[in-house]
Image 1 (cartoon, rainbow, N blue to C red):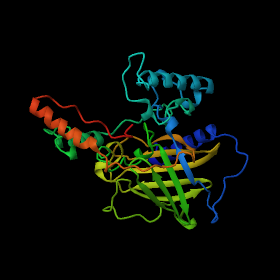
Image 2: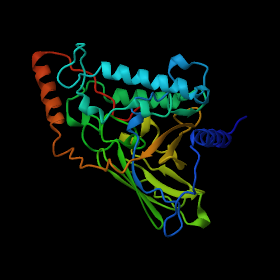
Image 3: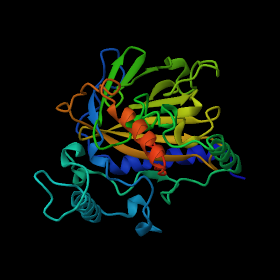
Image 4: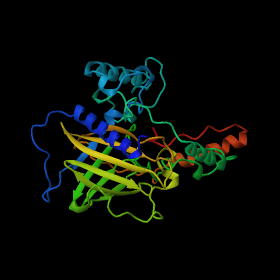
Length: 343
């Protein structure tokens, strides 16, 4: 019988193979910091991937990412770009009469610079594995706990993203319509990642060379955070980060916060890009581990801007007051929206 460890190893092999296949030829070695670690520092963006489906679309049934030639991918990206622009109201009015958000919200929208047809690289069918019976039972219990509550009875009925608290992990680095800049900063024994949207900063202690790859010292299970607790190490030029200790209200895709382990790999692939892959492992939620990946593109001209979400969060007051108005009028309110990055 295939063990979970062998599945994880297979997932890593697939991810590494995909990274190698998409890497451009490097003319020099990865630069090093003064203390000898690979230097990944800089301001990155993944905004060019904001139109990419998370899982393999039905139209590519039976095909793998590596089966899509570059010419076909270019056509796919151009088609996606055209579809989004057709649905978006243009500056000065839309001559076709289409409705949508203003174009300036699209963060210099340019899907044609994207890199892939979908994100999930393992399993090779590009689909998230089936959930377990335990996971479905947990989801039913969460839904039952909300029985009788509307989508805006209170601020606690809105998502943590609506409330300017967090997009969680890995949601904080998923492409969105704006705010797609990320700073990576390094010091001896530590890496920090700063996210533009919601403006969180993630501190990642690095394991010493004698214990790299072992996960290092972990916090007590009773200490939890929206971004979890991370430990990292360098595997060659790749920064590997394992994260556990998540909070129930912000855990990724309704996983079990006691069991979820996210393993990220930040791999320089040349051309000003770092390949970011995430392996999701929670045996109580999915029938096997799975991995998705996308590039982070170095772009120092798009530095992180202030994200004053709480200070200007009129949306919360508007949603709650609109819900009260609907109640007074006897109208049913709309269902709550999914948190940003829950893809």
